Length: 612
Ligand code: F6R
Image (cartoon, rainbow, N blue to C red; front, side, top):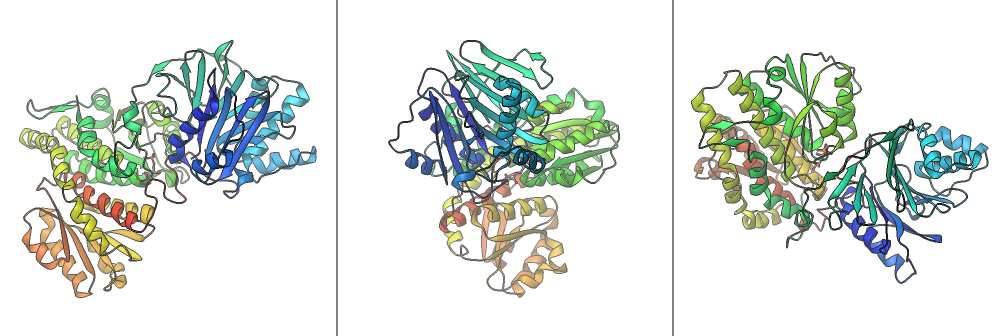
């Protein structure tokens, strides 16, 4: 959602904060702001991107070695200057940034108004900092103690950092359901929503847990306590993140870089977990808890958005190979519908960020009901990875483009490894099938590189359809979730309305939409259903729709009837979703570019959805 960064040390804070905010901008980009302490507080905030903030600050004096910065994704209050963070307390003694939502802010606000507080913004954050002020003033407390007491009164999600003008050598931070990481440098501290603003300065970090409060103090060091005031010994971890991973590396956009990164990231997902020459597969998280999986009544996936599409692919693959029943749930629905879960269920969360609020909440419910929890997560050290009983990291590296690309193919790789592991362990597949599947998987990075060679062709093709208002994506079997994912990519970055459908469902409704202006993207790689797909394409052509078919190379029959074909290398159906996704990503990217859209930061979206 929002991005948070703070600095306390001997260097000038402003350049560190601005650089950090630019790296965090993928988390929210409707307004941003900074506050620097230097005797008094200097506060600048502005609607728009971080660049607007920089222009606004211009040549103003913004010197100081302690400061906080924020980039916002609006929840309470429109993206306007007054709603941007940081926010002052009423007496201007405190200044605070916040990521999350305070659900009971309205009742707190009414109580504060009764006490004489007035507000300059529509945000829950301003209410929160006034509450801290009220408690601090009334009881004459240190800032950390006032924060601790205020946290007991708020309901919701928060990651906050507060400066107190009267305690100038200190930053106080706290989290619940929104991530915060402290960076420990030589005589300096950093605090941020993720490690990206920190990595050029230190690789020593401490991840805060829920309901923990961190006090960063140059003289006294780092102190962490929980909301009950129990002191917690910080666990210092070493970051393995590299600077190149969060830079564009010569590409125009992060999304394009991440699309091209996939041959490498998929190799990373498989590295050390399988060897096709020696014929083995060992997925650590699975091997250690094999019995839970093999004796499970059901495997239930919970996820959102693109990760939910990866879960749908898992349903096809696991049920087909391992014959274990699978259910796939939107985490946001699961959490509120009183689901039937037992101790014999395995609940698997799929998440790129590992911080999605709905997915975390779904896991909490599954834990209460005694299920075994497994995480397929990209972000190392994230909340979901820490909450689950076991898991497997995707190892795709930081994904900065807001539209998920390499994380999706990493997730699909992981669920395929999991399906094969289960099927091998319960004896549901032959040794020959197992070994040939490993060879197929190992060939995926090379085949993705081949698929990427059609980039120029796809760029040209997209010029013919970039002005449409609607698009339909069709696929059968595991290509149906690929169709959903293709449609989601197109709508989120190009703002074209797009829908994914199982190809055979078209005749039950969506066929009414088809005319000569409607592109229909058919993922036609399933050899087993080729005849049926050809019939679906014929139905579209009979209604003058524009057919773009993703086909295996050397597929003359479909090429003859489709308006355009985009070939992918011939591959087994098990891995086809991994490869057929690539042209869909490129198609969305080029259509969005040609429409002048900001592909890395699409309107209204944020990378990590840490609120409901
Ligand atoms: C789409 C996209 C979102 C996320 C969804 C879940 O490109 O990125 O739909 O997939 O918000 O996020 P994670 O995977 O971080 O839980």
